[in-house]
Structure formats: C-alpha cells, structure tokens
Image (tube, rainbow, N blue to C red; front, top):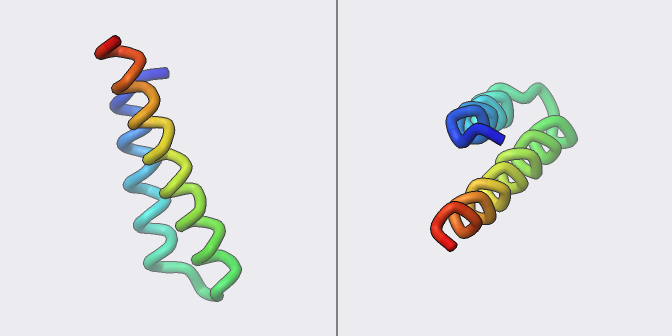
Length: 49
C-alpha cells in the first residue's frame, strides 16, 4: 500500500476525531488513527529490511 495514502488516511482520521459529534465517533476515528500509525510503522520496517 502506498505510504502517502496511509499518511493521508491517518490525517483524515485525526481530523474527523477532532470534529466528531459524540464520544463513540471520536473513539472510532482515534482507533483508526492509531491503526494507520501501526500500519505505517510496519510498512517502514518492511521497506527498510
């Protein structure tokens, strides 16, 4: 998967968490933010191996 896409989706998730109307939405978007972060780290490790 393209790194730019992962960074973009991570940023979108953070922005949506900040604009969330309720705690459940905020939590879901923050979970996505964290998951994209993990995918970025894993992808960097794969590229650098």
